[in-house]
Structure formats: C-alpha cells, structure tokens
Length: 247
Image (cartoon, rainbow, N blue to C red):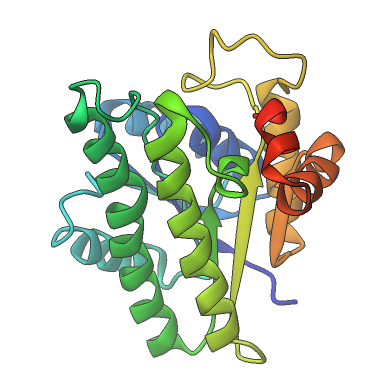
C-alpha cells in the first residue's frame, strides 16, 4: 500500500470533513481543503499548519460542476500532486416525497450525487494522468437499504454514490488507482444532531474509525465497525418485513 502524503478533502469546513482534516494533519500529511465557507477553512488551516505539511484551501460549491475540476487542479498544483481525494461534501436536507418540498430533495441529490460525480471525474482525471491515487467516497449506511420519509432522497443519493464506487472498483482492479467506499453510521455531526438513538457515536470516535478505514484502503467499510458491520449485513440479507423495523 502506498503512503498517501497529499490529501484533498471536500466539505472540510465542519463535521466529518473537519474531523478528518485534523486527524490527517496530526499525521503530518499535506492537505488541500475545500468547502463553500472559505473563512472557516482558512481558520482551520491556520490551526493545522503547525502540525501538518502544506495546507491549501479553496472555496468550492460542488454543485457548480464546471468549477470542480478547476479547483481540484489548482489544489493539486499547490500541493505538487494528490495521492488521495476524499469525496466528502454532502447535504442532509429532505422531506417525505409528495409533501410539496421537492426542492429540498432535489438539492440533496444534486449535492450528494451530481456534485460527487463531478468530484470523482476531476479526481480520476488527475489520477489517470499521474497513474496512481486513492479515491475515497464517503457514502452512508443509508445506502445499504432505502430509507423512508425525509431520508428517502438522501438514501437514494448515497446508494447512487456507492454504485459508482463499486463500478470504479471493478474498472480499476489491479491498477495503481484504488477506490474505497466508507459508510458511516450515526456519527454526531450537524446533520445528525438532535437525532435520538442509542446507536449514535461521538464525533471523535467516529472520525478515528473513518480515518483508520481510509488508511487501510478498504474496499467497503461500515464505520464504526461495531455495530455497523453486522447491521449492514442484516439490512442486505433480511427480508423487507424485518428490515422495515430496523430503519
């Protein structure tokens, strides 16, 4: 496994993206951090620079798909290459379908799937030119089995992202380009805050589990492994009459 020194993280201004940036900075990696809120990114970068290698920042709205490859290219140039790209930027809006809140669902799919696709295109163009790289897709446990009500569009967007990752894993098998799909369960972030469940993991524990899975370059990793590996298996294998009670 190649050591990944130069890492790009999108959605790095808060939540899981910010947490991963802190973890990788502590390992001395060089970071390219992108998000819509440049002020928060720059404050984070200033905090991380004493611990990390180079830390570059850029404003990025991943739904502006024509801008994504431009920003990725500029960050690559600033770091002198990219060894790993973590497609993390995401949105958790949503409402039950047919309740007059279509735009919230469409915005979620545009960000989590179309925006992710634009990031994947940009990352793989760089990796194909370099002939190496590690693409990490931050999906969700909600991708394993479609969720109801306000989670339906979000679940569908993450299932689509997972399917893209699986297709790329087949395409790049036995090549210098590797693809990992990370499926977080309930980790305490702004998206999940207020959700009452015994399965919630605190942010630091969840982020450490994510970084460990990324460093291991696992093909697919529900995180934290307990209890999400057995839950993922149950959601895939049990009949809908049972899984409906789980979701």
